[in-house]
Image 1 (cartoon, rainbow, N blue to C red):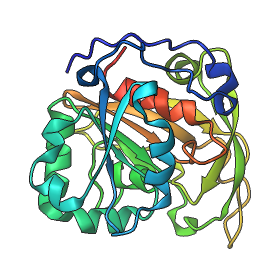
Image 2: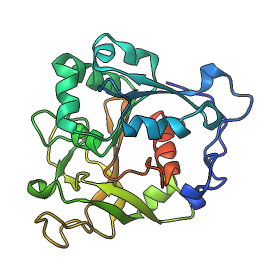
Image 3: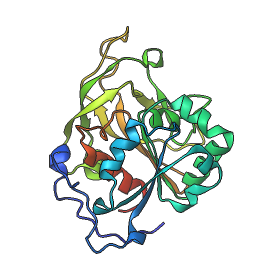
Image 4: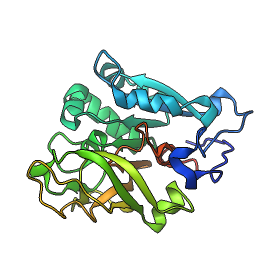
Length: 259
């Protein structure tokens, strides 16, 4: 999967959510065939908020070709036409149920063969190796899953040096929307490689009986490989209206192996 795209990766990642168009942009002369082809999963009949937010910046001007894909299309093999699949927020278990075994197998095969997987909140739960219904494409489990519904608010995340290199050179702290995303920690699946931490939670949400200090230090953004493909998972929602959307854009480029 080789995409010869000219990107201005460094223009304004440090400004993050303040920058639109995004800091990662395609050259004006890039043809449609060279855009990163992004499939965004959605299964309700009505467009949900995650795909709607993603559509605002996954545009040709920013180097992307965006298309919503439905469970039946995935089961029919549509992913062969894309570079990256984004599983957005919602419910990981419902996403898994909508895919059905055949669809889950198709997603795993897509990534194994070199495709990219970007999981956001529910999509990170789905990617994990924790649940029976999970895809198992990243060696991660969920910490304190008993209190998964810990609430939603803006939290601070801190990027690791690897996170700064991949997602946002020049800045290491961001305010980002959190809404019951997984608190990711390493699992011990022998058939999966370990993951790399790109960001940790620096502040927390502890409602609905969730214990204080359980969230701080757990992993907010992680990445790994699955077969020939790449997997990146975001527990919070940088694609939300307040961003920083550039984190997702950079994550998609990395997953598409544009580096």
